[in-house]
Length: 198
Length: 248
Image (cartoon, rainbow over the protein chains, first blue to last red):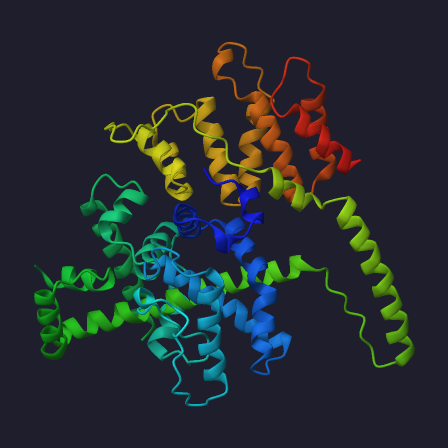
């Protein structure tokens, strides 16, 4: 069991065993851990982004996005153990974002600080910058109208990348078939609503 | 394998190389298939944005929690001077206060640790198929969402210890309100029927901590004094006394 007090030591120096626990906790949606990570790396990140002439106001925004990217890499299983320090991930993601912002085509090695086995982590996700297509706008509108159960299933499947077998387990369905037909009812509902609109 | 299964496998990243070929081929030649796939891909986009927006809000709240924002900037110079004096004095005060009196949030973080599983020790390699067993496995692994779902499905879900461990899950997920509701019932129950399995005193400690976390320090103090002054109780007595010193 994880002692929250242990966090005050330094996340970075935690042993592998603990890093697995941290990953599990982040995956399970534990906000205390996320807050601890946020607070622990914030100053260093702001200092780091000053090297690239980023004001602290912007740096905080970039930092938050970097945490989101880091979180998503953990949730969808691209980071399975913390072989580098958490700050290393955050810096690599942040650097990518900063270069994108400056719209410079740097050909330098962005991933140089990360270990070889971590090369498949995503440094980037699409944030709100891109405009939604009409179809996506409709989906957005009607997704928000779905019931709690549907949203939960779709979120676990499409965002967190769980397999149907895992979701059957997580949401304690009696078997996968029941979940599958529930999921297809949710999808049908969405499609019906959109059809009506068109 | 039918087409829907192929799309499912795409989203859970588990297409075999052979299936991937089939998938690519369908995407190119089967209009219906492509339409369905695009629909799901769009849905994925929409859900991801929705989730990111939520997470961003959570992070922005972390930022707000860091420092009470002082927004006294004004165009007049005197204002700035006055404001900076206030800020300097205020910061000095905050500094002194935070050094000698840790915030209730800090007290919470220093003292909170999910209660260990004493009910159903999980042995490695032990094979038990009850829901309760799975629930405690999930609990010990920190899968609190899953544990809550499982605790809700055990046949004896209203028993005190089940309710107690469910409340631990809520606390760990920072769903303090839900935790408080459960803990209150347990802490105030006078369960003398089964003293070995009585969680009232332990629940009281966690209830007090939860109040610290929500900032309801009056209620927290009341609970900590109950623990510190209860003669029959030894659990967390010293810790409660210590925390009371900070709260008064």
